[in-house]
Amino acid sequence: QVRLLESGGGSVQAGGTLRLSCAASGYTYTNYDMGWFRQAPEKEREGVAGISASGGLTYYTDSVKGRFTIYRDNAKNTVYLQMNSLKSEDTAMYYCAADSRQWRLRWSTPGKYNYWGQGTQVTVSS
Image 1 (cartoon, rainbow, N blue to C red):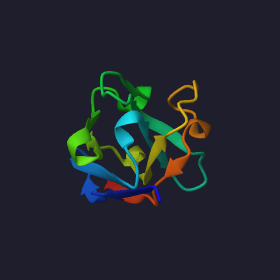
Image 2: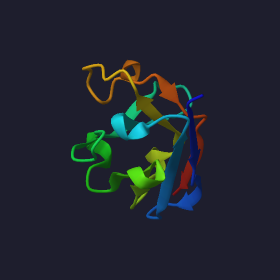
Image 3: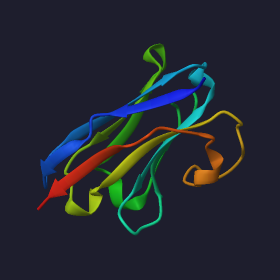
């Protein structure tokens, strides 16, 4: 059974730093594109960052460019989201997602991914 387990969320002040981790199990995730999404109350799920299976390509939504970094350690079956200079508007539940079907959809499209974690809460106070 495929499982994605996020960790690393928490409460920080604006300007602070967090690193989210997504540990994958149950499959050879090295062949899969991965993504981080977030969802704030009463808002749609938003793509934050994506990374190709090899790690050679990365993608970011405009609001996090220069502040967040996505990377993966395939030896550990883990993908990370390094979040610096956090802002109050980054407050949301963050989800990790995996695409095992290799559908040719934009990285930020939730329908591209067929496996999702349970989420980890990030709260940034100003």
